[in-house]
Amino acid sequence: MSGLGPAVSLVGVAVAGVGLLGLISPLRLKGLVARRRVLTRLPVTVSLRIAFAILFLAGAPYCRLPNLVRLVGILEVASALTLLALGSARLQRFVEWWLQRPPSFVRNWGCGALAFGSLLAYAGAS
Image (cartoon, rainbow, N blue to C red):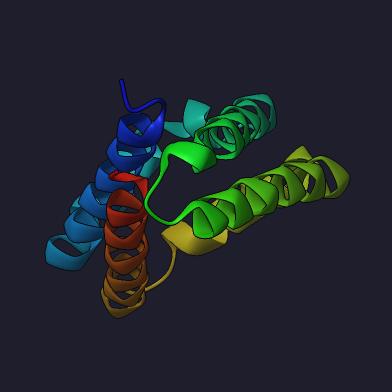
């Protein structure tokens, strides 16, 4: 068995998929975010960040690019701590700000997410 590398790749594919949706249909992505507000609440967001951090840090040795995956895991921990420091109100203001951005902004964000997710999918493959 190749450890957690396939799980890291799966997360990368999911991130790339969200990025592709933002690139192809920014209004649909914004609608999805607006309907799934529970995913943007502080406890859920921080829990997801911590879970991904554990996955990336534990899975790094089994990946094609272990240092990259380890770095992403460390950045996930840092982002979870930052979110805790900023608090729920600021997170919600950021989500509202993001939802008000024009389609061109969401497309550019989608391009970045597609590229990052693709890199992560490649990095996780063994």
